[in-house]
Amino acid sequence: MKTRPTRATSLLVGVIAVCAALTAACGGDDSPSGGSPGKGGGSTVIGADIARTGYISAFDLPGYQTLASAAQDPSAEGPELEVKIADNKSDATTAANVATSLTDGGADLLMISCSYPIAAASTAISQARNIVAFTPCTSDQRFGPKGLGSLVYGFGLSIQSEAAAMAEFTADQGWKRVYLLEDTALDYPGRVCSGFKHRFAELGGTVAGQETFKNDDQSITSQASKIRAHKGDFDAVVLCSYPPGGGKAVLQLRQAGISTPIVSHYGMDGAFWAGGIPHLSDFYALSPASAYGDDPVPAVNDLAAAYAKETGQAPATGAFVYGADSASILRAALAKAGGAKGDALNAALEGLGTVDVLSGKVTIDPTYHAIFDRQVRVIRATDGKFGFFKLLSPKDPAALVPYTN
Image (cartoon, rainbow, N blue to C red; front, side, top):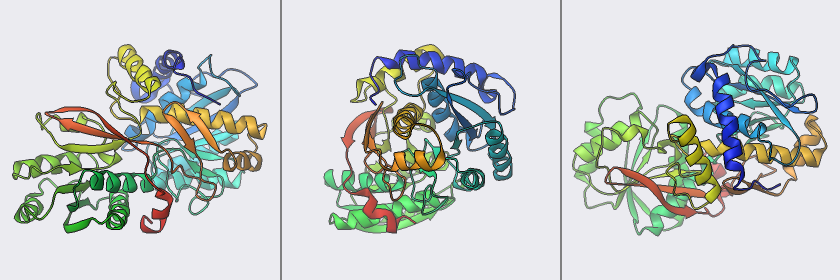
């Protein structure tokens, strides 16, 4: 099925309704029945076992908000969707209890957290009950048959796509020598850096050196000094991290006099972390969509503009498209399967082929249950202003799976 640009305003009606139901944003209850109103008895019920509170809520909520609003979109084609939410509080034990409660309450599908350990607790329940589970906000071989289970999917930007896009963009810019700065607090940045190194080497690039830090480090003065000592040996710094530590790293690199381009991945999407660096330039990050009104896909800009107008704030990152994209994927698969029964829906998803979604076209890889062909936006900061710079279609990201475990 195809998501049309004219749907952006309709989706926003849902965003406002969803906001009114969110405990984290606007109040509400914590019961599984709390959340967005459904369309009635014929709907496929999606149980959202996600974080409304706690550290992972900033990652879980954007996808939930636009998924729930897409479910309420009167112009949408395909099966009707209803979304019910309960707060897993960024806690694995709570997530397992929420999954049990939501599926006991009639959820046909389970939306799970972006966090792997929390999602693992949820999918232990959904797998045992033959229920398809998905996360809108990541796409990783571990969210599938090679990890959490045969009925688990990731619909976001894959780690392999991030790694391939970073390497290909860096090489295309003529930056053949790089210095790596890797955040080791979580495994996510390291996995991206690992994939980057492999693809960059394939493209003829070289790594002049590598330093590490942890996200909660208050200072990377030592690392910055070591990088500066190699000035002239590299064309760009490649940063694998996420806020707030990644933002501190960018600031301290610039304070150390390192003015070369800094290339990062989706973990550093958004401008919210850069307030203390008012004239930041030559910084590049990856995103599934531009949140700045200049995306090459008009429907994305329509949704971003309407979101900003009605809520008073622009989307913080490109993640706002994930929920709308997920709704299109699910509707297409449900129509193909003729319902939400686990085995049938799983077969439909694996054989779905290419689907038109709000941000472009995507294909689910049947082996990994991940999306490797999602187009990637390069976002650039120039004199403190962030905006769309380039659209990429990374070459064969799936080949990087062995290097991103």
